[in-house]
Image 1: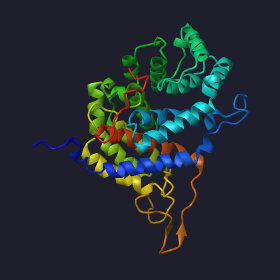
Image 2: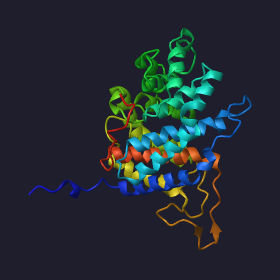
Image 3: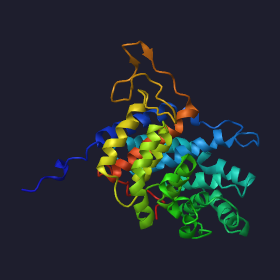
Image 4: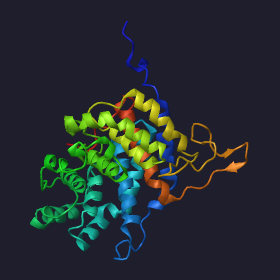
Length: 341
């Protein structure tokens, strides 16, 4: 007699990953006020790295979590609510149109809008302006790093304007595309390569777009790079590399899940926050699986996380976890999600 599908056992380690994802999303929900845009967001003196950048990251990573989880999964509902919150913050696209009018050749309003467009959230006025600007020679000839250009190409695809260039030759101009000596990996090249992978694979929803040679190179060296990041307390970069492992044509190896995810879980505090770098801020551990709170033997209590020092790493943790679970058969892409090609 054939076993029922629900009797299939899940790969080892995925229960832990699911718990880490839920705790991270809970922290993001409980700290939404940190993503609220100030009234003077359109003023020239406003620092977009502290206003639009965090909100854009919230939108992008939570749209991916929503797309890579089933509608009945609580992670799906949590991510969907955060996407709606972010859409409200940009006044359903009107704020992004204002930003684009102020800086027509700035790419960040375009890329933030593309995250929403991938969810089917669209603004007619923004798209009219974007189609005009993206059709100019000035747009196509803007000088930028290759990994940033790949992000723009993916945003063009999501929005529906003709890409200004082909992705393959741009990929080959990146550090990753050249398949460099693995020992030359360091922090800057690490962040550059993770975003190359995210842009080429549309944030993990199109793993088949990753060229075979690059995928093989990453499959070989990611375990060592992740281990090195965790050994040096680079939790944010290590989390992004775990996401990269789940963006490749082959699912993440079971050994990688079993070895690396417990390390990241151990630095997640009882609120769900994950620090970007450095030693854990809780003595004796304190991840959600341990109960957290305090070290009874010493009376030490958790040090508070600062929003700007942990929001990105906590979002990345949820993002990487959702991709890992989806690729290991414990979650699935929402077939109704828009924007993926």
